[in-house]
Length: 337
Image 1 (cartoon, one colour):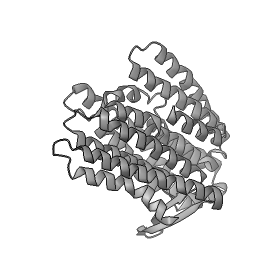
Image 2: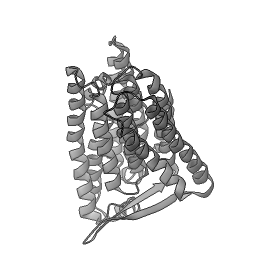
Image 3: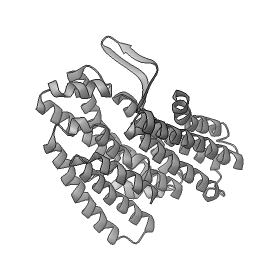
């Protein structure tokens, strides 16, 4: 099964690099077709892994050592378990549909090839994020989707509104990511490792204040990525990008990363129910607040953005109250509708 893990992970990267070779050339239809086929191959591999995990349990792969310095050991390791495989299937299936749709939607755009290179890089970054077995790998994917969202939201960079919206999303997410970095530093300072298994096993020995502080800092990162109040304004403005980008960002990739982080750190958040209650309270507020903003908008894409924001609020309510399976189920169903 290890080969399917590598295919699922690296097919989007191969897609992005292949299409990038033609990025400066006039539109070539085959680049969009090849990109879509490679993303579809990643999707098929993800479905095979889903069946395997369902039958035999989680798959853990250490590809190679990466950072070995003193007591710090971080491998290029990946885990395919019940949580990550659902995310993989959701991301690749929606991305495949978006890629195929984009062939027709971007048909008359002179930067057709560049668009598909960015889109595939976005999918690769999201796969790194959900498949990594440690917080550093997750953070690399986290920053990767942030970079790709900046490139895609500002794809029509000659429009002032598009470049402004891209910069807004990028800067707002960097502010939130500082909080997430603080959480990672605290984890390493207190545990001495950034591997999920080792971190979650060591939590019971930590002071409850330290655990709560780590949980709050990690959630600040999640707030930025999932556009929770008050870091929510970038999501509606992100609609300046091409419509397939909006579909991908709002459905299965970037905005769900924050929810995935809370679900992945469920063992941590289950130890700090007060922080979980705060997350659920904020989610409940955002669910109502964003829905009310959708009611008074007359731009369809912005209405969909606020609708997504409202649904993310529901996901955080479930995750904050410890119903992680419900949060993941709603994340998946929302990605499709």
